[in-house]
Length: 80
Image 1: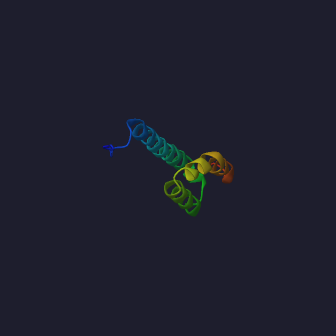
Image 2 (image 1 turned 180 degrees about the horizontal axis):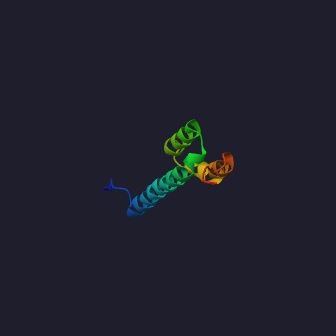
Image 3 (image 1 turned 90 degrees about the vertical axis):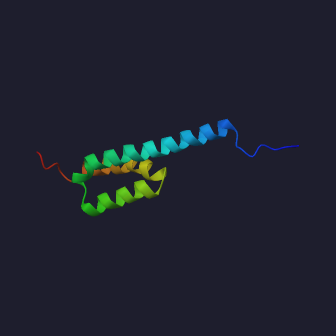
């Protein structure tokens, strides 16, 4: 009996979609972070960028759920 060494097509599609979702989530988080970054200190912004980039799913979700609100409430807007 010969066994096919290639993974099934559905398996490839699912993991490709998961990879695209993870990369998309990181991009959305980085763009959101860049918009709020002037209200954060340099150290806070750097830490958030590192968390978003090096903690694949939890980092972007943490920024979008918690960090963005903290950044908006953090320092007053310099334009007002």
